[in-house]
Amino acid sequence: MDDRTRVAYHEAAHAVLAYRLGGHVLEPGIDIDAPSSVTGAYGRAGVTVFAHDDRLDEREQQTAVKHSVAIMCAGAASDAKILGRNLPDALAHQPGDEKAARELLKSSPSVTSPEEIEVVLQGGLKYAARLLERSEIWKAIDAVAQACLKAGGNLSKVEIDRLLDAEFIETRTAEASKS
Image 1 (cartoon, helix red, strand yellow):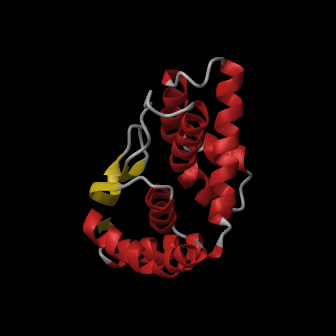
Image 2: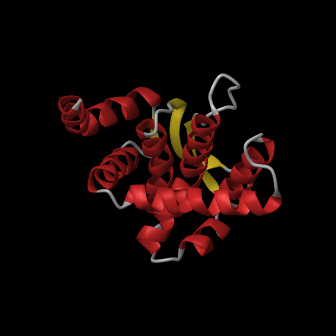
Image 3: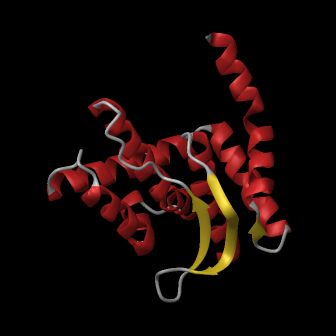
């Protein structure tokens, strides 16, 4: 697999997990050629993560933090899956994503110690990896990554949302029928 393809899957994983976990893809969407905060690295997916909200109870806050860390670690989980790396090694190769996740955890009132930051970070990474093993999620990542590559490396929020709405319609229909 060439590096552009790996980056497309990496960024698509961020976008798909944000969408699937209740966040959003932001404009400009995905740009696999965008410079990163890390020298020599590239690729960006604009996604939301969850901010601290005092109106949520402790359990809801913990879920929001878990989802945010999973979204931030989704690219590393994708790299682990497609490159055959172990999860900690894949995250170590993504210092920008790891730094963003650690900073979010440091600012979270629900995470109170350096040891807890490490536990929550590794738990979020494992959660992202488990989600990427679900066939409907990997199928969506594949669809977004392939569309991004076909479009020359850029995919807008509107295009990503349209793809993911179509990919997950069957899942939403099945979930709605269970309720």
